[in-house]
Length: 202
Image (tube, rainbow, N blue to C red; front, side):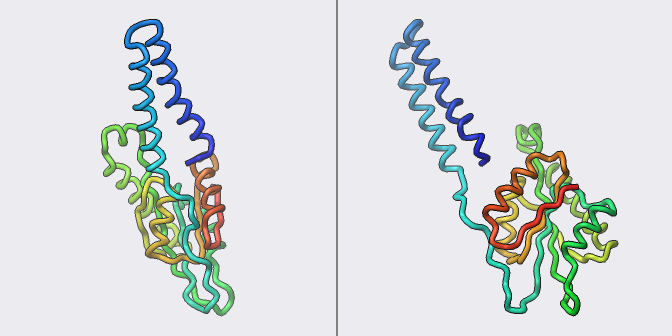
């Protein structure tokens, strides 16, 4: 969770309690109304706290034992234009005499407000799949062969999930310059990832 969200959550929980006490003092319900509101607020706070992920380190340290180099490319936006493809290819370029790295492209399933409200995640997964197909095809045309996966809507969670089964030595996040969520995810990944991390803004 972003640091600025916690004060807002606390404020959102505290305001109903204060309002209930004031309403009880001047209208009906008295202290009992405030007690009920307080209990509900505490319950909501416990639910929020229980849902938070521990901020532990993610992934493993890059190996120096001559093993195959693995890279996880996170496509928070499509990797289609020549500039984007060239930038990713430069990051993945192998040293002279070294084998080309194994590459996996991950597209988080961005779920919109209306989709979440309607509990419709299929549309988000379909859009992520389309973004994956376009990105992998563009990278292949640029000389980068990769496999593809659709991940969680939360970029950090998606990366964490992938690294449990795909021990990458490096993670490259590709996001749009105007994507604030991509910048927030990059900040958290930079602080938590054990593999090397780079953030490319297109």
